[in-house]
Image 1 (cartoon, helix red, strand yellow):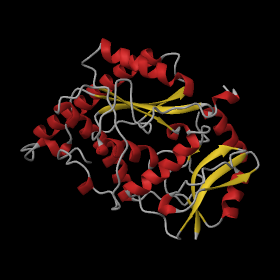
Image 2 (cartoon, chains in turn yellow, purple):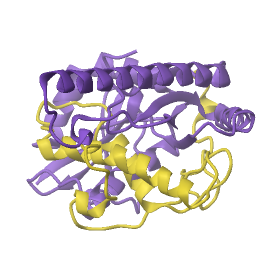
Image 3 (tube, rainbow over the protein chains, first blue to last red):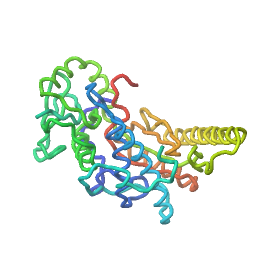
Length: 110
Length: 231
């Protein structure tokens, strides 16, 4: 488990920035963003008790996950096969809100 | 000015890429305390807002760390008054952090999502208000039945996933499912060298069962396996 030669083992195919899968890649910024938010905002080690997750942040996590689901459904409707993820994202400087993200079916947001 | 934390690594880990910039554009630097090294940058005094750019900047630094050795990724938004304040925490929690680093060493996280057949109805889906107590209770029961069915389907799919990746994972973490996300979401801790085989195993599962609505993302830093008290 601790073999030193594992350090730096390449994980990425060139140009894919880590978002890829068993089949191949497709572009979907929302999907990447949703998955990213889900990992970065909701998980990871917490060293300080000062991390206050506000109600808005919790909504954000939930929205992030919902984005993943709805993006996948959109992909499906566009005829993409399953088992696909995703190209690297582009940016927006605004705070994430529902307005940035796909319309969720009523009742599925809460 | 305060110190923003991205991830922890086993010392030595002071080879931060020179051009690496963090949240708000600050240069990323390493703070070592004994066996644990933190990658940080200096930010203003307020917690950075969780914008898409900031979340990506956070993960970009974590990813740069992952490219050299597996880090313990930090949750977004942790600020310390000073480098010394962070050092004091690293000192206080050193042994548990070392153990947590050891658990993820040489690994990375892959996340699988499987969509369930249908979204369980929620209270707001029900349409007009129930006209009687009996109708209300019938709706509650229908919701509970649907939620139970979704749980059973998720459990079943979880079993299929487990079979498919057996021998290729070191740990797993299943996310709580909510009515808002009618999916099974499982993160796996996978040894770096097993990632191609892991992908092939899931592809084989998808080929065997084309109706399965399966999606894989990764490799991530082990966000879901970074809790020092876990595992």
